[in-house]
Amino acid sequence: MSPVLPLPVTSADRELCVATDILRRVGEKWSVLLLAVLQHGPRSFNQLDRTVEGLSRRILTRTLRALEGDGLISRRRAGDRVEYALTDLGRSLLPLIVAIGEWAVEHAPQIEAARQQRSPQ
Image (cartoon, rainbow, N blue to C red; front, side, top):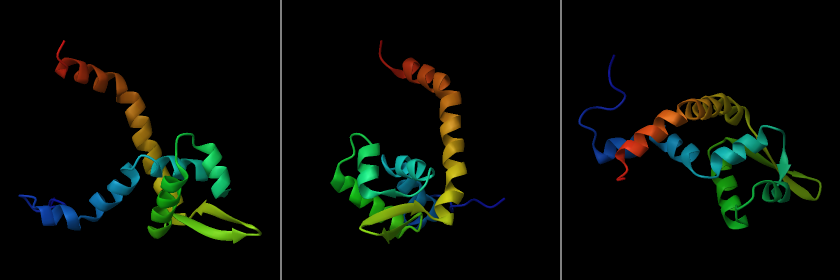
């Protein structure tokens, strides 16, 4: 099996890696949370603002624009408001995000134990 990236990995390789680009997006603090909220159906900006505590309106706007730019969510006018919804592409990403979350919950005790071993007592 050939490696996804040539070895040694250069800075240029990392910057050109499609997987790295997508992992940056879903690794952002708010992106995954907003995708998870939108799996329950379309939401207006104000609904999203009220649903996610601690998320500023500026960051909400920036995150929604980025997710829309990546094709993971859509934005459409619904009467006097704008609604955001998952696209088919965004829905196809959800099982992977859920799998990572389940893995994290399952392995949290092992990760915490490893961290405790590294921490100075």
